[in-house]
Length: 369
Image (cartoon, rainbow, N blue to C red; front, top):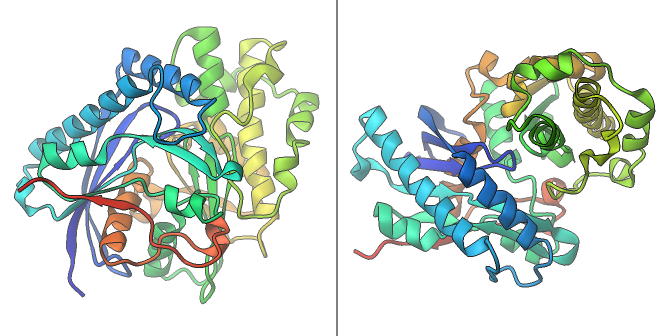
């Protein structure tokens, strides 16, 4: 198989910055990691993104850019361009050796029940600026066909698990702003779904109460105690009883439920909620996994990892323990999916997004040469 040198870019619902990853892959079984990087958003960037999310809430046309959305899209595109250039310089990589770039963009609205999903970021402008083919807008085709449009990473999770040769079932759990779960058994198609709010509610609480972006190292939650009554009420939401596949908008839940609690107790309650939601998702899988492999920002939160260890029905480990990447997994996934799109291979499947048949999603923008 011909190996393709590809960069993946991810800006997640945590809105912390741009992850960059370089891999070499055939878009199928062969994957080699070739480095990763990160460009943090500035406070003003995150403020602009929050404004864009608010302005996106009433959208019916996914191409419209009212209010802050146009400025946010330009900013997102520029930051991704900067992230690629800085990464290439830092790694000493000749840009001419890159074959394709996978560009997720920034999700500002996700309502698959209305066949609507919006990721801002101008793929054509990025292709012109960087001089490479760019695959972008990965979710839209799936949603327009009646799929959930999320999660998209299971095709990559499955490739990693199968390459590692796990004999028993594995759950790969990505905890960004929203958490998602991929359940993988040998010889069977993966099953996947969004599980719950991930880091989003915790981040929103910390911004509101402390003026900081995250509960770093889970330190605030570690000093608190979960309110079991509020936790039970949060878990009564009908989303958690739905069978996979299913997906969430970042703002499907609100931190208002813990408004009456002290900050430490509120943070611990929301941290417990994220872990308990993931446990509920695993309850919906065909059997218990032997291990849950955690990636994304949530894996850097010791309090959340402790909650997961206490609540999940299996051993818990982070992705780094297997030679994968806690931080770069999603960026690597979009690099992988960009190659699959070039080969017209599917990235979404009936058991991962509910689409009626496997689908190759994403648009390809080519630079002017």
